Length: 289
Image (cartoon, rainbow, N blue to C red; front, side, top):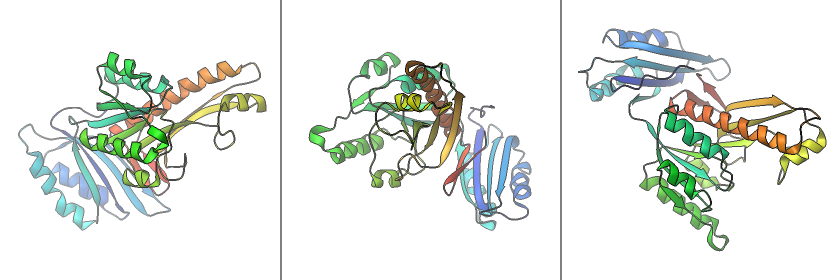
């Protein structure tokens, strides 16, 4: 996958609007006459919803003002009733990583972040347990213990909301955070909260899903990363993957393979979001990977 240019004079433009003739010409003409250099351009027309989606990365001259650039596009956008965003690519999103006790997704995200594979600023790591605080300490990331006291989940969720506000978090990542978020939370953070789960849902719910799958002789295991909605584990899908298994795989081997898939799928989904590659289109997504 190509990475977005992470320089101060590189921008990503996202556009969605009713599909019509001349959209690409209008956008590229607007950029070309200002001598902006387009480095990536992806577009899609959804025939069912009649919506147009575009992602464009371009580079401006070093002395060009971002404020002027933002104002300058309004006339073109208004002409086609565009919903649009423009972001400077050297200003990464701030991500808050939520986790409970299982650590494979968290460790993988931290490793990729340290390598520079995930263009984000980590706003912190939060958990309803203190178990993984040493992992955060080793990475030099602030850890926030948000316990559920006396079964009061709403009070804990309000503390999470305050943390999100205080840390100027842009995207919340559920890296195996084993708490159900309220409908109000999922509405307020629609399109800004990503979850990962194994592929056995809804067939094998509750504890020991791999043991249940092993007992049923499943032949594929996998994972799904999606935006969180009030419909548990049914939000718009960003990324998925599967691996074949057979009768020779033990439960422990299936669990190990599942951890690998979950970590990789979550990392890919998060990178898509961080690079402005994902558009929500009703109950599905358009991903310019």
